[in-house]
Length: 282
Image 1 (tube, helix red, strand yellow):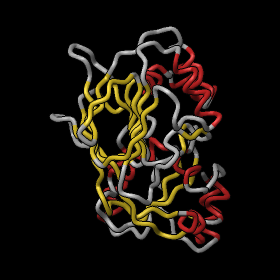
Image 2 (cartoon, one colour):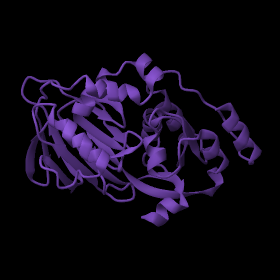
Image 3 (tube, one colour):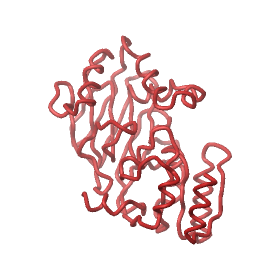
């Protein structure tokens, strides 16, 4: 981070460095920066830290920029920024603002929370919850694969997904704003940050074994049309758990509570700095 700060100062930027001290602190810092009249908020970190910061920025006109530094860096990979923090700092001046929608999670009586990338319930939320912080630091993305493999052979509780007037039972639901998943895979292949919609992908099966087939389809790009996979677009999605079960949900790769929840699109919510070629490619 210090090297990136040196690069930015060398390019003429005036910086105030603020380090997070605990969970949720990035939201407080970003909200205070907006109130103080900041011209730009740069987040150096992973998707979870970016999620916290943007929750303090939604509805404002202050741009959000990213200096990637996380395990998967889904957002940075999605927009074509790459994972090199120093390179991102050096090319900050080439980025352009894009006004985008974000997702909103509501689960009364809990506080509402926005998300930028995706919400997941079922299998992937269980994987997120099963990852130990020390293993994640040591293995990086390998920690997710290890946690996922630990689920093989287990039965999966079936949650309900309601969207577009229909209900689907599934062991894994992904409600996504991005194509990128985990940094180098693609599940929601037509999702787009520049459009006001979710791509909703659900997978059939109470056993975890069919998910080995689904993952093969993801890796090979064969997921659309695969038996047991349903893909649809929506701007409102309800996720509910079976009676008596506590099923987790993850937002942007971090645990965010339990079902039931409602997810909706919030248009014109955030200004994000992106490479010009990202806009041109859409």
